[in-house]
Amino acid sequence: MQEKLKELIADLKEEEALELVKEMLSNGTDPMDVLETCRTAVEVVGKRFEEGKYFIPDLLMSGEIMENISNIVKPHISADTEEKKRGKVLIGTVEGDIHDIGKNIVTFMLEVNGFDVLDIGVDVPPEVFVEKIKEFQPQVVGLSGLLTLAFDSMKNTIEALENSGLRDKVKIMIGGSPTDEQVAKYVGADAHGKDANAAVELSRQWTEGN
Amino acid sequence: MEKSPQELYEEREKRFMDAVQLKVPDRVPIIPCLDFFPAIYAGITFEEAMYDYDKAYMAWKKTALDLDADMYWNSYISYPGKGLEVLGYNLLKWPGKGLKADRMYQFVEGEYMKASEYDEFLADPTDFMIRTYYPRVCSAMAGLQKLPPIHGGYWQGIFGLVGSFGDPEVQESLKALMEAGNIFAKWFEFLGDFNKELEALGYPNALGAATYAPYDIIGDTFRGTRGVMLDMYKNPEKLLAAVDMVTPWALEAGINGAKASGNPRVWIWLHKGCDGFMNDEQFKTFYWPGLKKVIMGLIEADLVPYVYIEGDYTCRLETIADVPKGKVVYHFEQVDIYKAKEILGGVACISGNVPNALLCTGTPEEVKEYCKKLIDVLGKDGGYIMDSSACIDEARPENLKAMIDFTKEYGVYS
Image (cartoon, rainbow over all chains, first blue to last red; front, side):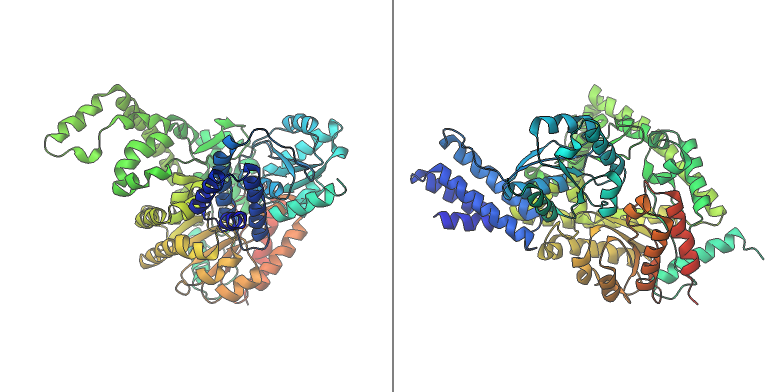
C-alpha cells in the first residue's frame, strides 16, 4: 500500500490518496510510515519538476495533497521527530517588493531536497534580514525580487549584512524574473539562480560537507 | 524640408502598421513601454506621479520629447492615487498607501472569489460582481453587500430593491462611488488633454486600449495564482465555464476601449500562461482557446492585438503561431529569439526582449550590442518592433536613449 500511496501522490490523485491514507491508518499502519511515504512521493514530484515534466501548478497541487494528508495523520502522532537536514537556507523577498510565487517555489524545492528553510516573507527590510540571519544562522541566504526596483533593495540588504559582520558567514543567491548574473554582481551577491533548480544546486554546492 | 508634426505622425503610424503587416518598413519601429520611468527621469516621486497630475503631465511629456521614440506612453499606467483611496481599492498597495513614496504599486493577490462560489458567479455574474466581488475588492463598496438580488426588481419587487437603497451603509457606498467617479472622470480628462498635445506634436499613443486573457481574468483578480492553479485539478469544468463566460467580456473591453480612444492598438496583458506556469496540455485547454477568441475578435473588428507576454514563452511558440498572418504583435519578455523568428516570422510581428536588467545595470555599448543582435535576427526583413522586455521603471537614461538612437540608426532598411 505504501508504493500505491507514493504513486497516487506523485500522480497528484488527491481524493484517492486521501482515501488510501485513511484506510492505512485504520488498518494500523504506523503514521510515521505514512509521512515517510509522503516525503518520498514529494521527492518524485520534485524530480519530475527538475526534469521539466511537472510545472508550478503540479508543485502547488502536491503541496495541497500533503497538507490534507498531514491534517489526517497528525492526530495519530504523539511527538515530532527530528531529522537530519542538509543545511540551512534563509529566504525572503526584499524590501518594497511583495511578489512571492517564485520565492515559494524555491522554498518548496529546497525543502523537498532536504534543506531546513526559513521563509521570512515578502517586503522584508534589510534590518529584518540581519536579525533573522543572526537567529537562524543559515549557510545560505536567498534574496528574491520581481521588480527592477528590488535591485537596490538587494544591494542595501547585502550592505546591511556587511555592516553587521554577517556577510562572510553566508553565501548569498538572488533570483526573480528580471535578475541575472550582471545584477548579482551589481548587488554584491555570490550568485544568481535562474530558477528553483538552480537555487537547489547552488545551495548544495555551498553546504557540501555538512 | 523639415517634416510637419502631422507628416511625422502619419509616418510613425505607417512604420508601425508596416511592421505589423510584415511588410518591410523604412526602419525598425522603436516603441519603449514605460511604467514609472518618467517619474524617476523627471525627478518626481512615484507618489507624486499618482497624486499630482500636473507633475505627472510634466514628467511624462518631458520623457516623451527627450526620448523621441516612435510612440509615447501617457501616465495611464500610474493610476490616480486619490481615486484608489476613495474606493478603498484592495487589489493594490501603492506609494502613499502601504508603500514608500519611491516604490511602484504592487498587486495584492487573494481569493477574491472562493472555489465554492463558482456556481453563484456562473449563474448570475453581474449580481455576484455587484453584491459580493466589488465589496471585497473595494472597501468603499462594502455597503452593496446589503442589497437584495439585483434581478429581483420586477413588479412589486422593485419596492424592496429600491427600499434597500435607503440603508445608510448602501448610501455610504453610493456617496463614495460618486466621489471616486468625479476623480476618475477628471483623470481621464487629464489623460485626454495629454494625448491631444502629444498627438499634435506628431506622436501616436502606443496604447489604444487594454484587455486580458480570459484565464488571467479569473486567475489574477478572482481566484489568485494558487487558487486558479489548483482549480485546474480540483474544479476543471467550473474553471473552463468561467473562462468561457468572461471571454466575451475580454473582447468587449478591447473593442470598446479602442472605440473610445480611436486607436487600434489593444494591449492584451498576459500573466499566467507562461512556461512553467502550466503544462502544454493545460495551456491548450485552459489558456489559449479563450485568448485566441479575443485575438480573432479584435482582428475582426479591424484592431491590432498587441499581446504583451510576461515570463518565458519559448514553449508556447508553436501554439500561438496559429493566428492570421500580419495582424498580431507578440511582445516578449523572455524568449529564444531564434526560435521565435523561425516559428513566428511570416506570421506575426515580434516586439520586446531588451532585458530590463541590462537597461538598469549595463552600459550604452552593451545595450547597442544587444539591440544589434535583435535587429539582425528578429528584424531581418521586417516584422520586429524594438522594445524592452517589460515596461520600464528603473533604467539608466543613457541606456534607454542608446536603445532608441541605435535603432533609428542601425534599424534602417535599405
